[in-house]
Each structure stands twice: as C-alpha cells, then as structure tokens.
Length: 514
Image 1 (tube, rainbow, N blue to C red):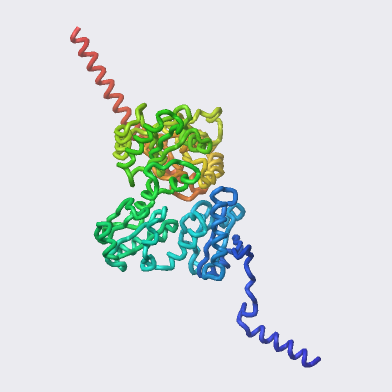
Image 2 (cartoon, rainbow, N blue to C red; image 1 turned 120 degrees about the vertical axis):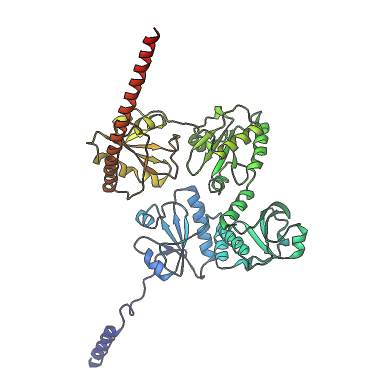
C-alpha cells in the first residue's frame, strides 16, 4: 500500500514538472475517407498541423460544385501519405468561416502553406482529379521538369504547348513554366533541340501550339511578356475560333482572359445559319485575343438562362450582341444584314469606343415608389438619380451574385434609418437586366450616391458596409451638395437674367424695325 502511494505521488510530481501540453495527445480532427472536415472551430488547428493544407470550399447544391467535389475526392485518394493534407469546408453550413476567409465564391480550391491563413495559393478550377495532381506536381517542380521527348505526343488530339528556348534557365522559360502551373489541363513541353527548331523553321524563344505536330499558332516571347499574356494566348487559341455555348463550354467561355465577347444568337436549323455563321467565323479571325466570338443556339432549351440574361427572344434571332464582362454594358449590332464586313466594322467601333450601348429596361414594377427601398429600372433610374431636389443612394447589383444579395438586408436597414428624411431616396437596380448609360464602370455590386444637384454628379462609396458609416457618408456628401447647390442657383439666376436681357433686346429691335 505504501509503495502504491509513493508511485502515485511520483507520477503527480512528474505531471507538475512536465511542460504544459506535453502529457496531452492532440485530438485527431474529424475526417471522411482521409479528407479533414473543417469548420470554424477547428480550421486554425488544421492550419497549425499542416505544412500544405489543400482546402475545397464545397457548394454541394451547385452542378459545378458536385463535379469539383468528385475530382477533389479522387485526388485525395491518390495523395494519401503525401505531404499534402486534404480538407473540405461546406460553405453552405459554415457561412461565418467562409466569410472570414473570403471563400463564399470561387475559386473553390485553395492551398494554405505553412499556416499562412491570409494568402492562400489559388488552384485553377479542375476538370478532374488529374488537374489537381498535375497542378501540385508542377508547383513543386521547375521549368527543367518539362524537358521531354514530345515526339511521343505528336499524334495526340489534344493541344500541346511547346517552348523552344535557347536557355531553359532563362526568364522566358520561367514565364513559360509559371503559365504551365496555372494551366494544369494543358500539356506542356520544353526543348532546345536544334533539329526540332530547324524543323519548324523558327528561331529560339518561341512558343508553339501544336496539334498532331501541326502548328496551330506561334507566339514570340518578348522581354515584356508576362505569365498572363502567355496564358491568354494559350487559352484563346486552345478554343475554337467561334465557340458554341453549351454546358461543356460555358465555364471556359466565362473564365476566358478576353472580357469582350461577341455573341451570335441564331437558330441552327434556320435557312440562313450557314451563311451567317460563315460571315461570323470570317470576322472572328481578325479579332483573336481582342474579342471572343460565341455562337448561341436559341433553339436549345438549356440556353434559356442566357437568353433571359440578354433579354433575347427566340423570334428575334438572328442578332449579334457585344458585351464586356467587366462592366456588363451590352451593344447591339444595328443591322439586319450579317456579312463579314458589317460584323468587323461593328467590332472595331466597339473597340474604338464609338459604338453606342443598347439601352435595356425591365418593366416598371407596380408600386415601386411606395417601397422602403425603391426598385428602379432603366427607364426610372435617371429620373430618380438626377432629381435636383432629392439625394439618391443606389445599390447596383447582379441578382445571381451572392455578394450582391448579401447587401440586401443592409440596404433595407439603411432605408429604415433614413425613412423620415423626405430629401433622401434609397434604391436599388438590377445591373444585369437594365443597361445603365451613366458612364459608370467597375464591378458589381456597387454603391453610388447621386447628390441633389442639377449637374449629373455621381459619387462612389467604398467604405465600411455598416448603416452607421453609410449614413455618415450620406450626410457628408449632402453637406457638400448644399454648397454646390448655392453656386448652381447663382449661376442659374445669372443665366435666366442674361436670357431675359437677350429677349428684351430682340423685342426692342423688332419694335424699331416696325
């Protein structure tokens, strides 16, 4: 008994002397099939324990989300026992963590290195598990790893990107490899074989796009060539000259590095299809890397959402629209003829900035002006925004954007906070359904204030998204507007007096002539 007591005392003393936590075994994190299931409560623990933490922010209800999930799970099985820890976060359930990590939207897969929570490396959206594995492999390698006997790939139907470099340790090769890392679904190779360079009749430091050893296009590297430049070249020339919009190409079209898109809405079964498509294809050749040409079959039911977005009815086809995916302003080809020269002229005027945007407006909603937050459309925006007697604060949003929808409750709160002020209007407008010709550019959602002035003045709000800060900004701009308004009123009085004096002179002159 005495010996047992002595043993217990010894153990307790050792427990006191051991460093804090040394006697505790780290509790394993929950996982399914080798993939950690992370939440706000255990995300930081996973970061501390992992040198490389590859996280899939999953959205189970979306079609693309399910495809990416399948690719991620397959890749996780391949990476068991590697230095990469695989994990997933369900953004539909753990919204607070997704918001904290700014991961509510794409990209869905991110790599956290050495516990760095704030600057993850973005993984390109994968087509399959091989995309993820290739991306990780290329990240860990160097340009020398792309040295290969690419003659084995010459009969492949897939595109092969080959860099012909005099020195694979050069800056050109580094740019080439950086592009390869971010394009894991494309096959790359590097060579400095003089015989091959002679075969293709090129000089050094040229990138060729090959298909079955046939040259698709060549790109001469220059000192100013960036990774983005090279990626844009490869991505665009990997696509068809005219790409048909469908479920498989939609993602490729929307993520293409060319923001200017020319869309031909047409029925593939129509009599004029071949002639118009041929003219569209011919025009497209002149605008590679400047304008992406897309054909939309209006007969395809699955294209309904795209037709709805551009407010195109099947009976209106054929027609051609140009849109910039950055500012979402749409341009309409004002012609019933669709020959190559007309299409080329339209595209060039758009690029030159001389084309006129197509104005669209949803129907005016019934009772829109009795709501706390006024729902504006294209035909009511200017009337409300440029009312010289009222200051309008407008939310320009995209209905399919989570970031836009997240601002709706805040905008309702703001409207209630100032509803007693008759000189203030809080409103919102769907920027995708209504073309807004107010020389306002940038991404959406956007918060813009229109002061109560005769001049058409617009002020962007870029501060904190709280009611307190919005009201503070509103009051500050309204005080500025009062000073401008005094000057405006003085100028208007002078103008009116000058006009009266001019009219009086004309009257006197008329009397003298009589």
